[in-house]
Length: 344
View (cartoon, rainbow, N blue to C red):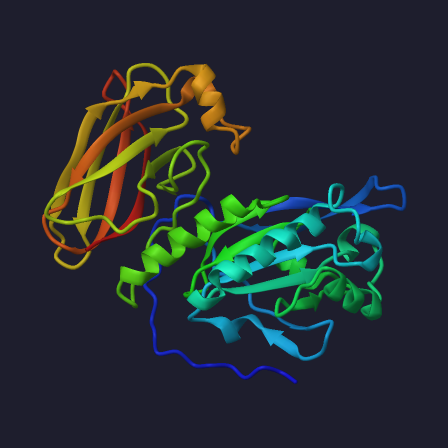
């Protein structure tokens, strides 16, 4: 039985400038019997800031689920290998471990309206459709309870929509249908909880018609951070900023060298008024420390990580476009980008 759609009256403000590209084109390799890549096709890898692609899939235990049915509620969506033969190998099979972590999230956040969905995408690696009875047995073996296991058999269409190339891959989706976090590989309970907490914290006090730049728990040892771009971030714990007082933040630059300055302004989207937030030199983080901070960003150079700990002061509440420039010693802007926040 298909779940009926609930219509919402909310209208969400689209984010004008999202820090990370919403869609990145990647090559997905066809897996041969021995696990080697033999040929490739091109799909879109959906990233943070993109709208979560819609889908309707059947559940292994019966019924069907439409992602749009959950608009208005946060969703954790995990693509896993749910075939029965994988069960019983908790220490070896990441998908099994992910289920354990998702059960923990279900127990912790279900009363706060967070929905957990899993999709069997074992076709991605096994190149054959899973047996439904095997999937049913898997749900009972893993004590999945109210967590549905949906079936993405055959063409692996939904996994391709999301650009899934490895299992598990997990997405955290806001009540407005925007992807706020993506984990390629095993997502730990601490990572999932941090992402969900940031989402709930923001949605609890943000007006219904506002969609702000989402925060991510991406820097080791720091609170969640919002991206202005791939190279400029602000660590603010995913909280709405306070107006009329100093609000503590940490600015990070990932791809500049030498003596650099960060210049930040805030523009009220309703009145057009603009405020200066920062115009200060950034400090280079020692490489040994930077390596630890950048654990989740293996492509980032530890020799190019700079920081500024500051307090930003926004005089009145509202929606703001935050603009940051990274300026070198010759007063040349080397990095520049924007994001959207709400000051309460």
